[in-house]
Every structure is written in structure tokens, then in C-alpha cells.
Image (cartoon, rainbow, N blue to C red; front, side, top):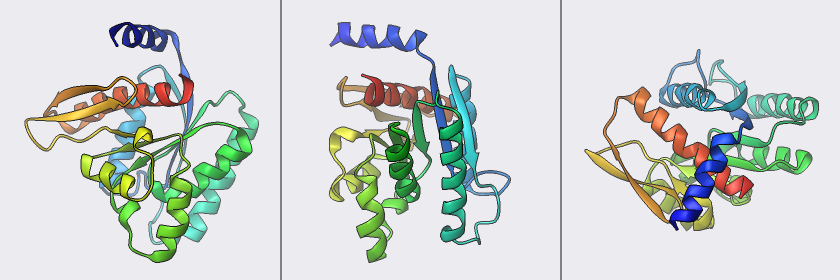
Length: 212
């Protein structure tokens, strides 16, 4: 619907979101997820999104029972002291229990990025408990169509899942949002430029799922 798309686009021009961005893998630690999280946070911050970051950049050797409570307590304190935050962003699905609990305590919607293994990890306890919370997100951003399919296999509503993929071919269809039923061809780009394009799509996804 062209008129709906135009109206939403105009609304986004004057709408400034304040987002709590949480990541358990972030520089100065080194890795693909760390680089993606850093570049995405930088790109989001350049798009009229007021970003508050709570990230773990230390050793990944520390177990999740140590990192997750640390992230949770810092996130809870930030949400308590800054009531203007509007959306909670979790940078991978391992953080889904934190996203759900922080959302319940603050009343703010939460979104999560799914990378693949954070959905398919075969430990039975993980599949039962962590994905229970992942199903309760306001929106999920999958980094590939295959990841979106894995999410749907695990009971996450297809209407919640938006694919914002890294290009693997000359052009790759990226579904902006099921609400608009729109598919955009994204050309192969350098990594940083590709992340910027995807951050723009992520902004529209958050807006459509959390505020429309």
C-alpha cells in the first residue's frame, strides 16, 4: 500500500527512538559477532536513534551465569534511571531471557537479532527454556532466510520475523517487514556499508513492530 508506506516514511523522519542496545560479544574482544555488533551500533547511532549501549567486551571464557546477571543488572538500572528509553534491543537470541524480563519489569517492547546457532544450539535445556523467551519478543531480526526458517520451526510467529540479510550473491532479497509486504534487492556492498543499509532496515522494523 503506497499511501501507508508514505505515511510511515514521513512519520519516521520526525520520530527519534531511544534504544537500549545490549550485546554479550563486543569489542575490544575479537570475533565476527563482535564486529557486527559494533558496526551495527555505530550505524544505528548515526540515524537519529539515541543509543544507550550495555555491552560485554571482556573474555568470552567467562560463563554465561556470570555475564548474563551482570548485563541484566546494568540494563535494569539504566531502564530505571532513564525512563525515556523506548525499545530494548538484544544483539543475539542467547539474551532472550534478559530481554523478556527487562521488558516485563519496564513495560518496554524488546527486539532480538537471531544469528543461527543461537536458535539451533542442540542442548535440550536451551531449546526448552531460552526459546520459550525468544518466542515472546516483539520482533526478531534474522540475518538470513535460513535463520528465519529455523525460527519459525521453533514456534516463533512468522509475522514477528524480518530478514535483514548479509549479501551472499550479487543481489539478495531482503524483506523489510511483513506489514508492508515489500521486498528490496540489496547489492553487494563493503561490510561497513552493508551494515549501514541494514541498520536503516532495522530502524524501520523496530518502528513498525513497536510503534505502529
